[in-house]
Image 1 (tube, rainbow, N blue to C red):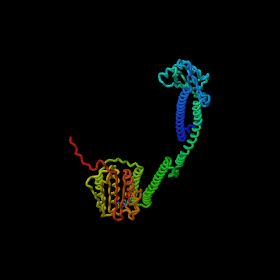
Image 2: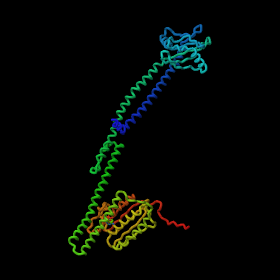
Image 3: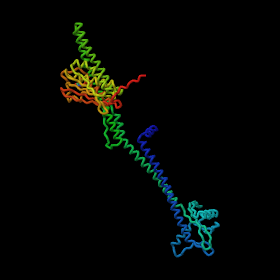
Image 4: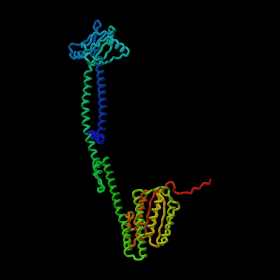
Length: 492
Ligand SMILES: Nc1ncnc2c1ncn2[C@@H]1O[C@H](COP(=O)(O)OP(=O)(O)OP(=O)(O)O)[C@@H](O)[C@H]1O
Ligand SMILES: [Mg+2]
């Protein structure tokens, strides 16, 4: 039970809903507190205003009789006046400038207002500030009153009198209490409703996540490429589903590639193995002389060598295709590299009566490449050009700058590649069907493609049947060393 609860606490749904709820609670509490304070201030201001008006009215209704005593003067025929004065008499005090109360509210709860010392203190304060004094006073009935006191002068006799007016704050306090009580009822109800709504809306939003989770669980080797239906909301979850679908498609593609590769490899290995087996069996059962045996072993050895080459090439290719091509990129003099390789290929080219030439630019061309890999790339392209060019033809190799990049071009006047085969020649084991085929594994250009990819470059092929082919490799150039001036070595 406790464990299940802990699991729920950890869910994204719970965290989303509870964060929202917590924020809402804080906001509502602040609003409630600020609301109460504002209401109190408004009521206090209103109360003060009323008191000032009451004090003004009291001054108007008080007259001084012949002995100088203040009395309330009301026109008995005016009922309005009577009721006003009746209200003014609810909370009031009249006292001499010696602090002796002469008249006041009969309510015993308000006895405290007649206290001589308090009256004297207020009188001296008013004399100093020339402002009425406003105070809050709690009566014996525990009801709070707000009281304003002022000075009234009997003009005829030149005597000062202390007068005070007050009003009960019970009503105001009741308003604030009602507001607080209503808010306290409203708060938990709102929170409860929001909790339910946020819990369900978080759950609905995260439902799509569950479909991703379910799909991920269902993926096995046989249903790779599984696609999850998008909801069409174009939100974060749809983007997640999109990424998931793309990942699934990529996984499917690489699994397909591996499957295809294993099929191709087994097929390629079977051919020489069957040949070796056949040759050895024939030798075992039919050869009678030492020469016949020797010839059979030589043939078998040739096939073993082909097999060994194939295994070596496959190993390299599998490394390169899984992105393990080690590229130690550095500034590389491509003109110099072409020169060395063209030199190396002169003998096989001459043997086939092919004119192999390097077309040089004025300035050397520098790339940002891995030497070993680029050597392998050029070797493959040159070997192909020589292999697929008939006697009397030519092969040209050149390097040139192309903006921030560099280009390696190997061109021949050979047999050409049929247009519909060009998109496939970079595939593993792909060879253009030829009635008079040259020996080859169909792997050379797969290496070339992998090396170009590892360098972030591209390769373009143009070919015309019977006229020749042109392989153009674009590689990143070296921005710092366009020309490589030989620095003179300083002699010590
Ligand atoms: N310069 C070229 N001229 C004409 N055809 C070419 C040229 N280069 C490649 N091809 C065609 O592309 C195919 C694939 O080339 P690739 O280098 O991958 O294999 P290969 O040369 O047959 O064998 P490998 O290089 O593995 O020994 C070749 O079989 C050939 O038909
Ligand atoms: Mg080749």
